[in-house]
Length: 190
Image (cartoon, rainbow, N blue to C red; front, side):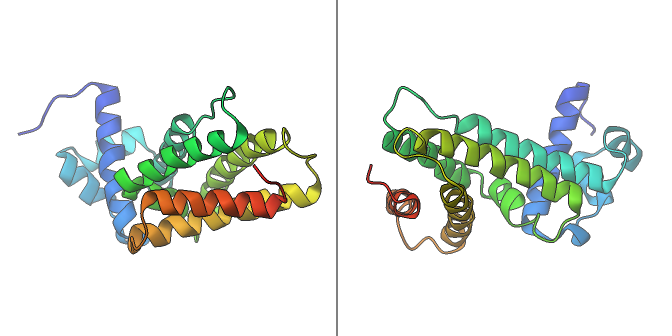
């Protein structure tokens, strides 16, 4: 029996179903028909919300990215090292409790088209700007610092993916490793 949902509830339901499917399988192995069947709606209704499969996928990636950014907003009242730890705690907890969403943002976009890469890049740029603003309180920001922060963000994404796939260290150990690595990369002692 089909459940009657508001427009926004239906859209969110479709995005949630899609997030789960895209996190577990490559883009080409997820079918719009399957999403519609799970949601118990017509394929046409899904296309009403998202004109193409790519638009559907882009909405999922954008939503997961935005959720991560909102949840990890730094508290400027904290010392820099504590801001970083707090942000990483939120980020790691999101990855642990929403592994599908994390994988979508950081793994599934690797071979995707330009629009999907731009969504991910915007998230990386927002995180880099946050970190550089905090680091600037400890040391002048140079091009080397900018490069180190961008490299560190890629390092963290890779480490979290590895941790999700093979959790051989605790969440706190991974956080502390990431904190030490950033400060070493930018050449400051917190």
